[in-house]
Image (cartoon, rainbow, N blue to C red; front, top):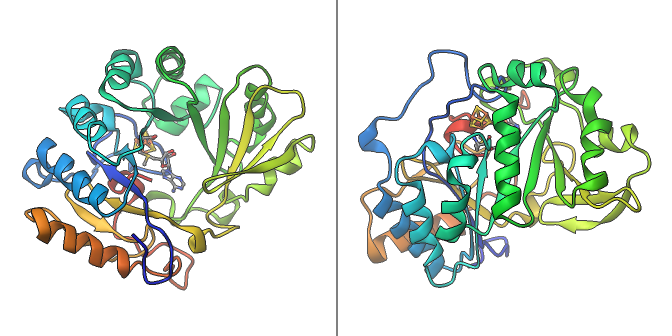
Length: 314
Ligand code: SAM
Ligand code: SF4
């Protein structure tokens, strides 16, 4: 359905948990993580019912996210239920990848069509520093499992000045032999990293400066696409900070406790848990219609969202 600004809202990002075994420095604190209570989390059935209501309103793409969606109990059942809904054309999942060796096959069988895997570095020691507790080998094993069971897997890499920008050429080099989409995402000042030094927030244009051979080859969703001529894969730039894409925004988000966020950076949340049938559909339709026209950022440039990224799902 269309919102009050004529945008066709077709894409739902559903977070199925706020928990994660990793502690990425820009996303979660090292300790003292706020957790939702078990009873606040949408059940498997509620997740599916909510997606069905969205499908009836014209949503045809759903992305499962978290926290880390693969630690959610019942994740395969959630995917199977959503994958079977009429009108859902694409069911995707965003993951840090470390549990994919265990789940990739089951997810593919359950109807997940595509995966996005987050990987911010190719350096094992830096991977540990960024994720605080993760092992690079686990993420690489996850990538291999994705390659075995899925087509068109995308790698998402958050750009951080002074942390991983020195690796841009090495990361782009992955597209030489692999037919993947490697997407660089601008760091957004939300949650854990909202107070970080401004130098950490670098624009996607840093990628073009570091690899001048990249040539524009169109766009894919919110991503400006490039490739090095003759190489197998593509490079995407997702630039929510330097190139706002609010005018083309086609998405809504639902948190693991069933709050609909019409805009990532707004504090507004519409509670959906406990609603069913026509009431649930009407609440979602109202929220879609009233989606803000643009990022609502405070004067300091920080997001107004009360939740960090692990509580929203990216
Ligand atoms: N745990 C899964 C993962 O890491 O892919 C899914 C949830 S995570 C919150 C979704 C995406 O948000 C990841 O690609 C992560 O790198 C990205 N992300 C987290 N905090 C961010 C921030 N402040 N700015 C930009 N991207 C961010
Ligand atoms: Fe976990 Fe993903 Fe956040 Fe990293 S970015 S802490 S993997 S939720």
